[in-house]
View 1 (cartoon, chains in turn green, blue):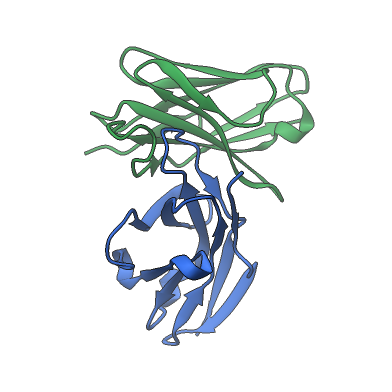
View 2 (cartoon, chains in turn purple, red):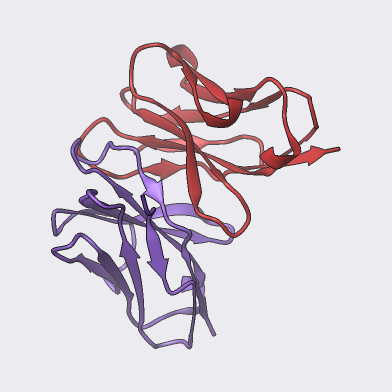
Length: 115
Length: 114
């Protein structure tokens, strides 16, 4: 069974541009979570989608947004990129049957570098 | 708001020695508790989790963790460390409400000496 996949592996953008990151969950999982792992800031919860709806978001500005598609894959969009957005962005998926307390399975991440 | 503290930023142990990584949490009720491991350049892999019941939880790769309600702790242990255990370890809590909002500790980096 394939795990969580993320694309691209690496992404280089300049300040002010927009970045789009993609995540495919494990087959049968309906929940997708996004995290930012920035140097010195640890792993921070960004967004949780389940059944196509945004269920919760962390303390990030509105320029961090996303969506979940009918096939449960997800996109994270970061607008007006700032240097401090440089980080590893991790996606996780879960079966979604217990309202967000499921075990989460993580993808390998997308390394975003903002120049 | 919930919080997770991993007091040890970096731990070094010799191969074959025992290991304990500390995790303390702050939350109004007993949350769901997780330990993850992250190898360099990789995503996170779940080692074990505690939801309820037996407070000693067995995980993969020979790891175990003990939930102590009185100390708000969920320490990770391994009797004999292998060189391949060198990685970063994260403790995480999820509130037992429908929030889906995990809070992670800052991580503990484990170095294993030959």
